[in-house]
Amino acid sequence: MSDHDHLHDHEHGHAHSPPQPDDKVHSYYQILGIALKELLIEKGVVEAAEVRRQIEHRDSITPANGAKVVARAWSDPAFRDRLLRDGNAAVAELGFQITTTKLVAVENTADEHNVVVCTLCSCYPRDLLGLPPSWYKSRAYRARVVREPRAVLAEFGTRLTDDVMLRVHDSTADMRFLVIPRRPAGTEGMNEDALAALVTRDAMIGVSLANPPTH
Image 1 (cartoon, rainbow, N blue to C red):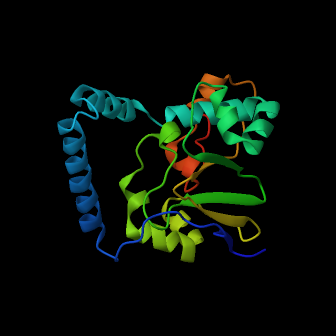
Image 2: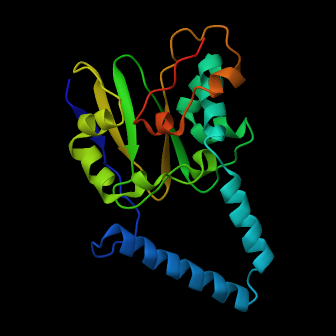
C-alpha cells in the first residue's frame, strides 16, 4: 500500500494571500476581525452584547462534543453508518447543528488510518471540537503532515506499521473532517459516558489514538 493518500481533488475555497510567517498572518486577521467587529457595532448592525454572547458560546465548545459523537458511533452500528453517510444529519441527532459546512466522518480501522489538516489556514470542526490547537494552525504541521505524515504521527507517539494505509484529508472553507478513532480493546460493556472519556481531541484529528481503559 502507498504511504499516504492525500485527498485534495477539490477547490480549497480560501482567499489567497502572500506567504507570511504564522505570527504575522494571525496578527493581521486578529486586527482585521477587531476592526470589523467595532465597525459593525458602530453602524448598529450588531450589538456588543450579541458579539459577547457568540464569543462566550464559541469558548464553551470543547472536544467533549466530538467525543460524544464517537462514543455513540462505537456503541451503535446504525448510528455509525449514518455518521459515515451524512455527518451533518447524524450529529444533529445528538443536538449538534452544523449548518454552514459539510461534515465528513472518516473511520480508522486495522488497515487504514486517517489524519486531518488544513494546508492553507486552520479550517476545523469547531462546532464539535472547539478551537483548534496552536500546532494544528502552524505552518510546520500544515506542510509536514502532507509530505511526511508517518514521521509527524510518530512525534505524537503514534507509530503505524507499514501495511496500514495512511490517508491525509485536507479541510476546506466548506468541508470539515472528523476522525472516528479505533475503539480500544477491553472496552466491551462500557457505557457511552465511559467511552467518551477515552476519546481525545488529538484522536479525532487523527494524530493520536484513543486512550485505553484504565481498569
